[in-house]
Image 1 (cartoon, rainbow, N blue to C red):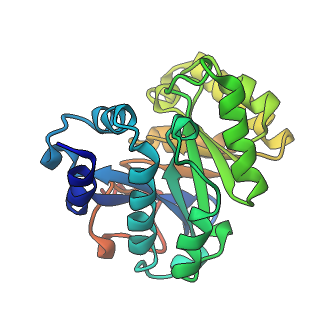
Image 2 (image 1 turned 135 degrees about the horizontal axis):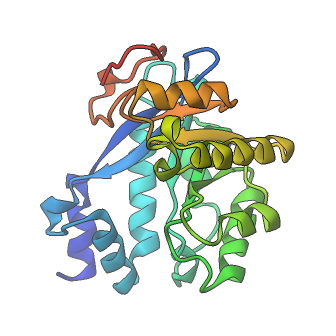
Length: 254
């Protein structure tokens, strides 16, 4: 499949939104956009899809299409103006020859959105140590442009604390690994509690990601986590009407 045909077929892709909820108020704070339907293009996983786009030097061109698709869907949400859109950013974008600044602002202007509505996520699961200078340049670029930045999957890789030191993000999302069974694992509770305290001292917001059980949420509340995301609150959904403005944090609604 040539590059033009790949770009033409992107219309089959969709985004599911998963809410991120303020623990104190139970109100929705943001939604994370999660890509769907890559299997309809013949890819067995999202990682496989992006790897192929990278190899075809299409990563940035495809990402711009997907950014607009996510933003276009985001503005159809009720009360979207009072929430953020979390969008996953591939660490290899900077390597693309067509990479340039200004495109995201143009998309936002087209949909009458302020850049404060967007938070770009960098995953610690991805290899960021191979070109740390390049990643830092990418982060610094988006920060200079006024976008919020989050480190996703915090704690599962070897670069998260280095990024936290060298480039203080706006948000860190604690990985599901540390939350699974945290109510019965004192070691996990100590680690997460200290990550939360460290982040707060640095002025960084905390999201507990992948919360599936009420017992996990109870511990997150007890140790001072600010926001929560996971199946306990709601599974990702492609249906706009599934996203609510207020959620019960004490009744499983997924």
